[in-house]
Amino acid sequence: MSCIIEARKLCKVYLRGREEIHALKNVDFSIEAGEFVSIIGPSGSGKTALLNLLGCLDTPSSGSLRLNGTEIAGQKERDLVRLRRENIGFVFQQFYLMPTLTARENIELPLLFSKKNRSAKRIDEVLQMVGLADRGDHLPGQLSGGEMQRVAIGRALINDPKIVLADEPTGNLDSATSEMIFGLFSELKKRGLTLVVVTHNLDLARRAEKMYTLRDGRIVGCVERASLDGA
Amino acid sequence: MNFFSLAAKNLQRRKGRTMLTVLGVAIAISVLFSLLALNSGYEKELNKEVNSLGVHILAVPKGCPYEAASLIIHGGVIPKYLSDSDYRNVSTIADVELATPMLMHQFMKKDEKTGVSTPHIIYGINMEETRKLKPWWAVEGRFFSDNETGVMLVGRGLADKENLSVGQVLPVGPKKENFTIVGILDRTGDQDDQFHFFPLKEAQRVFNKQGLITTIAVRVRDVSRIAAVSQEMELIPDIQVVTMTQIMGTIMNLAGSARSLLLTVIAIALIISAFGIINTLLMSVNERTREFGMMKAIGASGLDIARTVLAETVFITLLGGILGTVAAVVGSSIIESFVKGMLPYSPGGSLIFYSPELVGFSLGFSILLGLLCGIYPAFKSSRLTPMEAIRGGVE
Ligand SMILES: Nc1ncnc2c1ncn2[C@@H]1O[C@H](COP(=O)(O)OP(=O)(O)O)[C@@H](O)[C@H]1O
Ligand SMILES: [Mg+2]
Image (cartoon, rainbow over all chains, first blue to last red; front, side, top):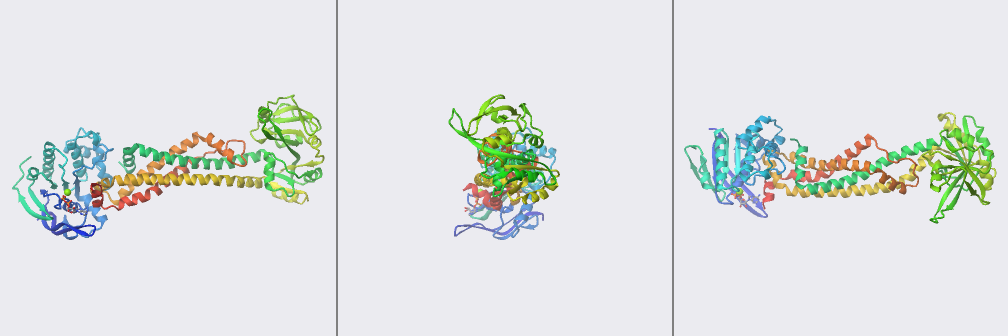
């Protein structure tokens, strides 16, 4: 079985003052390479906590998390950085674009950190893929919300990750634009990427092949779809 | 894209704040640069000035401190005298190419309009020998010969200041004897521009100093013999020997105390601007924790974040350094007149001297300043875990 993500008894405990907050409690699941998975659940249920673990932004409190066969638990920050660079593309609800960089420069930004070289042609391709071929020279302030999120998706793709993680990517967008973003995710899935998308929107979540439901730090449901037939 | 161009773009977000910080650095660097330029210019001018005396050794009365020797160059009176016989003894020393006696007299003259008294200096000289020491002397009118009476030469600076012209007669000395200006010395650019010159005999007679001289200027045949000649001169009982190198050292010391005051000012300016930079950086770093979290999420390491912050700081200080250096060059005349007023002795020529090394140093220093100021904010932001960083801004 080609599981790109494998969680076993995954726990995450945060400390708020003296209080222990069990954000994830014994979470078990696995995601196959090339799968498009969505995660839903009420706010505070641990969705972001889970995504941050998958993105190597944080380490498990206990349990095991394997990414591409590599155990994340107990890794040093330096190795996490490398795992992140090589495997993960991140998309946030608030886009987090650099306001004084053009769309194109924002997309190029991860290359500065990964020290990878990408030809101008490759960057054009990414712009094209996210539907911004004619917006490359615009600053974020000159773009609509949907366009900004597409820049962020382009940025997540430039290092050729295996997995794209999106935390409520349409939370700040209207429904038509949200549709477009999920259309784009379906495109990426067709190109062989693994996608894990957190959302509040049930309609959109159902577009994925598998839909997990989180509640109080536990997975309480998993709905599978036979296939994904277009957008 | 590189860290520097990223820094440049990031700084555009807060243009006003960036420019103010740059300005702070610019001021500090321009003061630093001016002082260093001044320091090297001062030494250079002093050297030139001492060389323009055409003299290697001065003989002054015993008990006369080195400071007095610098007064002699600049003009001033020492209440002690050498005698004509000392002069004759010095002239006979082997390797002395030329020795010439001088008598200096200072008097105060009141300006009729302003009522302010300023010191005036009269030099009694042997014209023939002096012209050998200073072959560049040229004159409007004529030089006097050594046995003439009732004649004088004045420096161009003095003539311009007091509206003196050739042929004019001035009353001199306790008996208000008439002396005719027979020549005005062409501008030399040094202290000679400010003096009156009399035939030595006349100066001695008018001021009642018959047979007395203030100093003997000596030129040695070969510079390597200066030490030997001055040793021999020391043997003459009345004489204290001062070499030009000693005089320069003394003046440099005098100037040193004034310069250390300036240095303190600069140190304070630099510290203030350093705290300004650090404060600005901490502000902008705190505002951007979420952004740093994002950067980590898209593959930045802690070191990358630190580099980003440091690049921004260095960008600010380097820009300030360039601006400050340019401003110092442009405003050098203002700075110069300010500093000339503070120094106990300043040569006539321009004091500020720039070299490419100096420009390099001040730019290098601004980079260093940036690195120093950036270390703490960079360290602080690089230590954020991605989680802290991303959440930090949300709550
Ligand atoms: N860094 C943290 N420190 C303390 N508590 C945290 C931290 N991160 C998350 N939590 C808590 O963990 C729980 C799950 O949070 P989160 O994963 O953000 O939920 P969701 O994304 O599903 O809304 C919440 O109770 C939240 O307050
Ligand atoms: Mg969340």
